[in-house]
Image (cartoon, rainbow, N blue to C red; front, side):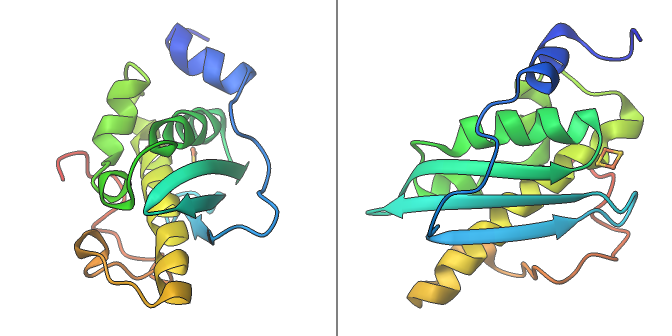
Amino acid sequence: MGMYNDKVMDHFMNPHNIGELENPDGIGTYGSPVCGDMMQISIRVQDEIITDAKFKTFGCGSAIASSSVATDMIIGKTIDQALAITNKQIIDELGGLPAVKIHCSVLADHAIKAAIYDFAQKNGKIYAGLEGFDPNEDDEENDTCDTEE
Ligand code: FES
């Protein structure tokens, strides 16, 4: 199908960082309200830096490509930098996604936040980038297909 560019196809065919970290410092799952697909991201954190990340995605090819590139993007970043990543940046990093697949990148964005939320909860930390984030909120329509945030 000509729907996807080479970079998306490459991340889909050869995804990076698949799996689940043993004893992760943070782990989060997010389910898409649009299609019901799920993504789990686990992270290792040392001195506020994400030193490793892995994902499991029960979803479409775009979700797999988005999680592959998103985990690449957060490894080596500080928590604050990782929280600042938007789904638009994930799409840009992939060189674009078809409009009907935008929500797949939102899944990755939210799964990152869910993993960091878990880390913050376990360690009594507060991050400005998590303000208003609720990992259990998965049926709101307002954050599904929004690339403008
Ligand atoms: S994550 Fe739902 S169609 Fe891609």
